[in-house]
Length: 160
Image 1 (cartoon, rainbow, N blue to C red):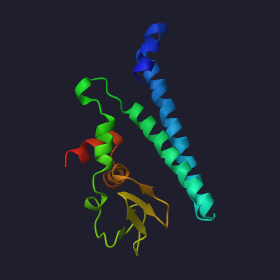
Image 2 (cartoon, helix red, strand yellow):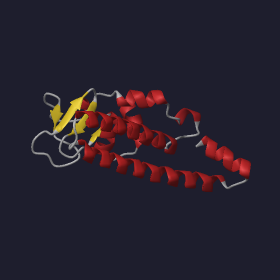
Image 3 (cartoon, one colour):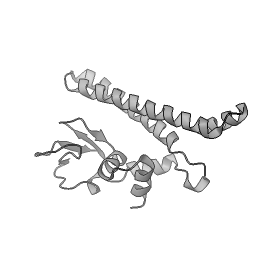
Image 4 (cartoon, rainbow, N blue to C red):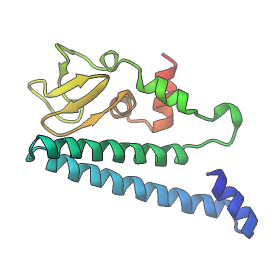
């Protein structure tokens, strides 16, 4: 976001307008990436092992791109309130089992849909639902459970 501010100043453009345009673009980009994720997840179940491996690689790339956009959207100019990559990594490493109820043998009911039988798997501090395709790390789970934005989730997970 700093680049946008500096460029707007250099060209004599209203900074608030430039920031709002960038935020609009980033929100659109996140929506496109999330749509791409859903398409990849739908293709996941009907493919062989090699294709699934390649699709997982695509999901990882899309997650990384979404995180980059979210980080830029939530960037704070005030030094002390700025979130660092270390803050994000610490929040990701918060044990997901502590956020969920009724975890048995690494499985629980999905938090994304009504679930009569546990369909969500927890491995390496990452969840995946075999019914609906919901997936994510501790930050994603916290956001889903508490309906908060990325920055709030990271701050709250780091305060535990």
